[in-house]
Every structure is written in structure tokens, then in C-alpha cells.
Image 1 (tube, rainbow, N blue to C red):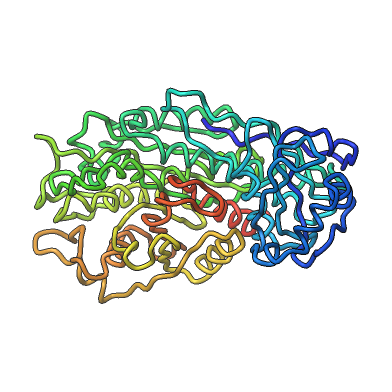
Image 2: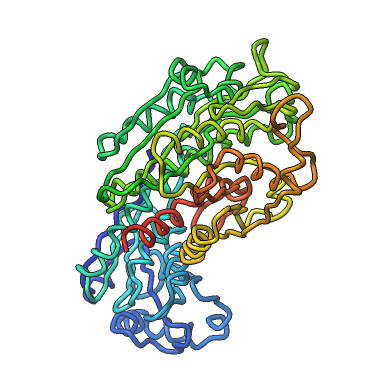
Length: 490
């Protein structure tokens, strides 16, 4: 997998600045018009006043907090560039991460020396740097992008390193998720996906793979119907992290459709290549579980993912078929492209029956309708429990991951009524994201706190974001890790 750049922390060494040959990144407070920190004063002397001239110029006032400007090949320095980043000693977490991302975006083969001094949130700078330096290159035949060493000079390196350690575990989880979502479907088959999750046993996770024979015995007819047209067998993978006491685990459930053609209700050709990301929910669950194991979380969490491939074939499920879920409810399949909810229905029920969790959150790239409603800035949040939902939204805000609560109600649920079965798998075009959530709610027990996250618009994007290049974002790993820390480890 792709690993975050290792970052070293050390005390500020002013004598090293003149001879460093890579990139220098200097963090400067927004209201600084002259060099104030010891490192800034030294750089100003070495550059014969060039730093002060820039800080006093109008161009500096136009730089937004967290952004940076390069002074290329500055006279008096061996460095290839001096990057001046607008972030002061008391910058908030979001600005600190953005500043780190500005530095991480430009890390080259010569490396970077970050001058953070006494900045209170220097660890957040390192986190943003690590996240933005991600690049997915395993299928490129040329020379991989070279990334040099990253060193942060700070006033108290031991303290900053300690604060950065759990963030590094989160970055590992985000990268794992991004790699999974970015992988093409001929590589990330249900076999390969399950194998990657099984490999996390070496981190201390308990991993169990349920094959089709066992899924049949469990009665997972809804899930199995989705994958019956594929050569790749359907699987359910269960990952357990037992870092707490004797309390019931919290459950995370992810949709893992490794490729979605739409089945017999086939999708248009344009854009179908993006359906390699239809396992995004399972990818996030996997990334969170990896993070929890790496940072030895003091909580009990179980992650379950349903891995299937939705293909048109002579054996494939047809519109009009009726399948029976593990719960026992029958479902009339009106549209085979509404397959993710069928997968989740069985895995959600299994999670509750087997683990009796304290609460459950599922994630899925479930509907195009949520993109119409919220674009690519926010994940749609649906819930039956205000307490869990509020805690989740708070965690999303704290981590800067956009999320917006959507409505639910009986009128939407009524649209799922079937003439020949207990329910249909779709309820029409209007309110499509909501009726999908209503469908899932039918497989949540009455007393079970639950949230459904529709990440169709946030799992993979076409343009760079603050903390990620275009492609897979890893949305949700940070927020869910924060939720678990706040809810179970505080």
C-alpha cells in the first residue's frame, strides 16, 4: 500500500538553514510584516532582506491563511525554494492542516525542512502535509515520483512527535482507504479485497472471511442475488478490534461493490469507469479499522463489509425478481442498479444479530441522488437517533469533513410498497437518496441507534481538495476515528 511520508521532528538549528539544499518552508503569522521568529530573522539576513521585502509587500496581504508562496532559488541560500506559508503560532487546526497541505503538495526529491518554531499546532501541520503528499502510482510504468525527507524544526520536538503519533495512524488509515478506492476492478476483485483485509491480522485485528456457502446458510439472499452474475464470488469480511472492556462493540458496516455495471439495469457507458469506487463504503470501514489497530484504540469496534460485483450475465439477477433477506423480508428487485442497499440489508442484519452492538453506522456510495442534493462537498447523513447523529456531525465538523443531515419519514417509506413482496428496492426518482435510507432503516432494529452515510459525492472527486489530490479522498476515516475517540475513549 501507499504509506505516508515519514516526518522527523527536531529542535530548530539556525546554522543548518543556509546549507539546506531542498525546500525550506517557513510558517509566518498573518499579521507579520517583518521577520519575527528566530528562523525568520536568520532567513531574512541570509537573503539580504528579501523576506522582509515580501512580507511588507501587497502580495503578502492577498495570501489566504494556510496558503503559501514560493521564493524560488533565493540568493544567500542553498535551498531550491523558500516557501512562505501564512499560519501563525496560534492558528486553528484547520488552518494548520491547510498550511501543511500547502507544503506537502510541493514536496520533491530533495525533501523539505519545515520551520514551525513554537507553533501550538505543529502536529496538525505534519498531518496536513502527510495527507496532501499522497500519490497513487502502482500502475504507472515510469519512475515513481521521488519524495525526499521531511523534517520539522520545532521548539519542543518530543511533545510535537507525541501529538503527531496518533495522527500518523489516521493518515495510514486514510491512505489505505484511498488506495482501495483508487484501485481498478481487475486488480481489486472480491478475492483481493478480502486478502488485503485479512493481512491486517498482523496489526492485531481479528479478521474472518465468510464465503458464499456460509452466506447461503445464513440466508443472505439479498446480498447473494447482487453478485450471482459475477465470476468473483461474494464475501462478507468481519474485522474486530477489541481494545476496550467487556462492553458491546460499536459497529461499522460498508458497501463493497468492487465494480457496478448496474447489472441487467445497465448503466450508461459514459462514466461507468468510475464505478471502481463503488466499494468506497467498505474502503472507509477498512481504513478506520486499520487506524484503530495502529493507534491501539481503547474501544471495541467491529467492521463488516459486504464484497460483491454487480455484472450482467446469463445468471444475473433480473428486474422483477424477488429475493429473501437474512431478516426474512422479501424484496422485489425493480432495478438491479439499486444493488448496494441489498448488500447492506443483509450485512446490517447480520451485524445486529451476531454482535448486538451499542450502535451502528453504515457507509455506502449509494445514490446519485445525494450528489444532486449536496454536490461533492457534503456526505448525506440519515439517522434514527439524534444523539448518535449529533455526535457524528460534531466529529465531522471537528475534522473538516463535510456532512449534512437529511430528512426521513413515513411518506418516503410508503413509496417502497410492493404489489408482490414485502417491499421494492426503489421508490421512484424523487427523493431517491431518502427512499434508499428508508429501505435500509427497515433492517435496523427498533432500539438500535443508527446512521447511514451516503458518500457517493465525497468518496472520489474530479479535482484536488485541500488535503488530497483528485481521486479518492478517504472521506470518513478522520471523522469516524474522532467519533470513536470522543464517544468511547474520552
